[in-house]
Amino acid sequence: MYKITEKKVLNEQVTSLTIEAPFIARKVKPGQFVIVRIDEKGERIPLTVADFDGEKGTVSIIFQAVGYTTKKLAALSIGDFVADCVGPLGLPTEFGNPKRAIVIGGGVGCAIAYPQAKALHNMGVKTDVIVGFRSKNIVILEDEMRKVCDNYYVTTDDGTYGEKGFVTNVLKRLISAEKYDLVIAIGPIPMMKFVSLTTKESGIKTIVSLNPIMIDGTGMCGGCRVTVGGETKFACVDGPDFDGHLVDYDSLMSRNGFYREEEAEHACRLGAYNNG
Ligand code: NAD
Ligand code: FES
Image (cartoon, rainbow, N blue to C red; front, side, top):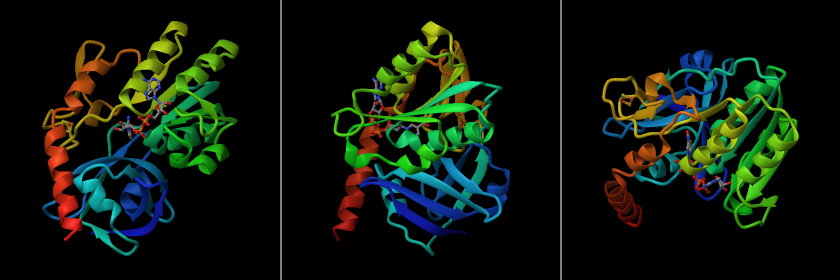
């Protein structure tokens, strides 16, 4: 059993939980994920580690309460326990030796972009952060991000905060004005696709973190297969980071929609359960 030691509601849908998991906290590196199961009969959900503290023995996960299990997870409180927290899983991010980097977070993807920006900042890399949200009221992790970057750019789709438009508008402007040798993009699949198309023209190394459906998280079920450079890869053991210029985003989008009806049905059942 793994105890919840801290809980923060970041916006109406997004929650941060800090969990006591000393073994994972000592080993985990940016880019890796854990699989959490709330109880014995629970679904296994993969969540990238948003932060960790080896001394305190804790890992933090940030998630959007969209489905049955994430809504149940968001309803837990400090002092509650989850049955399992397995990890660290996946490969750590390979940053190389960049001189100047851009980290891009789209919506709740900022939770995963944050440890990347922090790691680059701690390596002494000049790092700019671009974040994009639909609207001002759902902006998350602004203070945290500002502390680990040289320049912070925020966009909103509706223009209620920062610059109106998508993250790719700022990206185009930055890379046409300055020389960057690494871009990391984490967020919705269309965002990662269009960021990669933008950086491909200038040949800037681009890393994306993929979030396909996962089951075991250890390379056995094949559920998380993605096509990268024409080859089949398993995101849980070969990723979740991949070369953004080589990912087949359209097949990833189509595979991620396979269980939409079942997910909606489970969410309805939870609604009925919560309303008595
Ligand atoms: P969202 O749909 O509100 O998009 C966030 C931002 O992404 C937008 O404000 C915009 O700046 C950018 N964006 C979206 N579509 C774009 C496009 N076509 N071109 C350029 N930029 C675009 O995000 P949300 O509702 O917070 O959802 C977050 C998404 O991130 C979910 O789909 C979730 O599955 C995904 N996610 C991915 C990971 C990962 O590891 N890749 C992790 C967590 C969440
Ligand atoms: Fe089963 Fe990756 S989750 S192979």
